[in-house]
Length: 314
Image 1 (cartoon, rainbow, N blue to C red):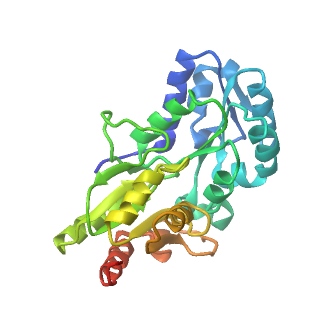
Image 2: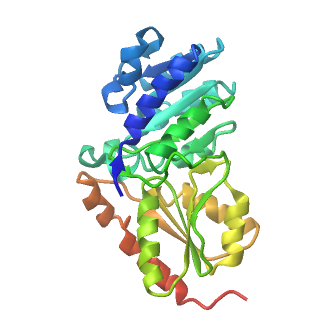
Image 3: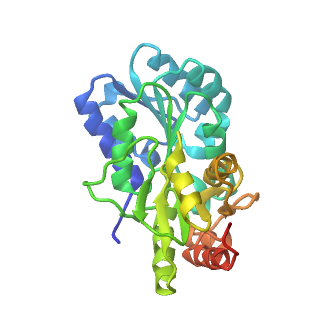
């Protein structure tokens, strides 16, 4: 698979939206060259605001602009946009249901050498708990483009989570993203692997290895964390032996927790959660960190083999 940057896809899509809609405004917090909002700035400088290193102000200004009827895309690193500005997101953006799209980059361990202070492994948990907030995690550049475009049409706050590194291309332009609908890339009857973001390519790799062992693994891209696709999760629980969730995020409060909440209320099923296990990150290359924290196709494969050894549910 070739690779592309989700950040570049985001920046280029903003320019396309800016050309189509004069109501689009972009706000950044002194990181526009990293978040790629500088692509928009070069074309539409009159609709671009840089608030400096002030993430609470980023959200306050964005909310104020949105209250005038504009569609605001606010961008920063995930750990700062969601963590430092949480109270402002809660009390200004979400309570008023304002049209602010929080487009965070450098999420998860993928921030790499910047270390634990810059690795946001809690953002899905704190964003999905907010009323009125929709939460999306694109898996590749194509899905990023579609999610950003759709976000501009949604009335109310949206959180879009992107990583730092280039990621493998999974979708073509024939793919159509739908809010609240999972994308089933592989059907299977033995077990289900539900992944989001850059973990999706690892899930596909693990499924290929499992197929060589005669194990039929279903692979699901859960790019909408909220509102989550309950029907697909229930179908996985009902028609496969168990579910493995995979995310570049804490196993507490993210995709794995969301899936577990659904099955516990509908059709209780074994769920193995692969992610960061209640620890902070560290500095290192992405591949090294993924190996250290078990975010690998090997670990998905090993968990799947353990799940297949369980006695099937009655």
